[in-house]
Image (cartoon, rainbow, N blue to C red; front, side):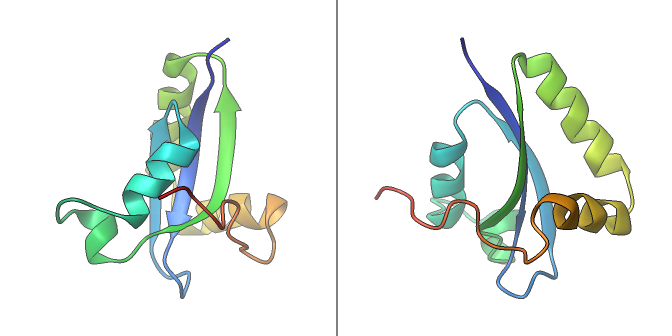
Length: 96
């Protein structure tokens, strides 16, 4: 069965939050950490995975991404700190 992920990345100082969705979390985080073009995550060095959820359908993952993005920053922080209170990188080593 295929899995889909909604995730939140931040920078080293935990000041910028980026929410995304993917079907391969390891690959996607690697792409954020080694960008081939200038984009939001490259500009703000958003490379630390601090939160993710797993879904069985892309539709559910996308719906959750939109819900998280629509909320205020304090709600995202609350979500992260509920499961990752020290804001540790949940994927500290990626291939490549």
